[in-house]
Image 1 (cartoon, rainbow over the protein chains, first blue to last red):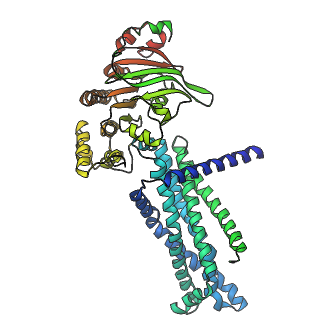
Image 2: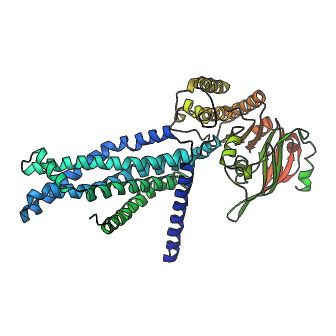
Length: 256
Length: 258
């Protein structure tokens, strides 16, 4: 496909997602609100993701510590290991890896669920039953991803820091108190807040892309598979783009 | 309408009754493909009109325009005197309490039990209803289709015929005054298809509903139709009773009987 056509297709897709987001806000802010469905989505999106996010967080902290240690030993600053692990996890690795895991699990599930509902006319049936599908399906899912990803990231960070503590203790002996006091001593407001704020945007990207891809799924099972797949790919790319923008913004604000 | 087709329009049923759906000069196209081209139709109170046509003729598009799932490019659709095309979302929601839609694929919510499927239309915000009333309506709907024992099953646990009957029960639960059936017997064996026909007739009689049935199953057409309309090339090609269609010599009509 020529570059011009690809660019045009990309811009058209961007326009469609923007319009979809606009429709979400216009229908989502008007009462009545789907509180019960929102709580149900928070349970499935948040609580049900906890084991996977916790496990990956633990491994992330453990591996990061074990890989950092030889370099720090070489430069004779192994005592800075808790600080390095803490800053790396809280500022960057925790939010991004959690968001990518979240995109893989939740983005694909939303894309496939809405895609199959579209293909089997369940979304039309909802509309005929007097239910606004944007409000009931899209707004609740997007809001749940926006609310749950920051909470999951904070939990993943905490578990990753604990994994780091285990990693530190494989080769040496450090008390839990000393390890965490070293970690928290090195963290500042400018490390924690921007990384928490950007996870709201990561959550929005995962939710809106999953819903968009599912809602406009083509007919057929292949279309459902494509929706799930492209939801993960696009939301993962968006996570990196948002992360890049977040770094620029925090740099401009002097928070780095 | 062609000259040959005009010959069979001599026996229009129920023309003097109150019109509940009036479709005037409906035009709808997808890309360059014109699906409905100056289509006109009137459905009267307690009348069942079957829209006959080949696959892809635009039959489903027609009834989706009536319920507001699709918007026509031109033309007017009046249901109970109100123009559907001009309605906002809230007005459409209110209209949909009076107009039921049976989907060809049944469109049962596969993550919900049969009870939750039936409760779903009742639990929407615009209906003030208590839990005992919801329970009573769910049981009445299931009794109507003789499937009370499936209440706690999931749609995946039902056969094709059972799923169709449950979908019909969900369509009827709000006791709509008009029902739009999108190929109600498609994909069913002949015995089950006749059961669905009889169920449609039984419920029409019980609740005095008007209906548009989309079908190319001639047994279904024969059993349910007060009036038959043949949709061809986006236009109303012929209109009449089932008998007049059956006796017609028009080649385009005869092909549905062969």
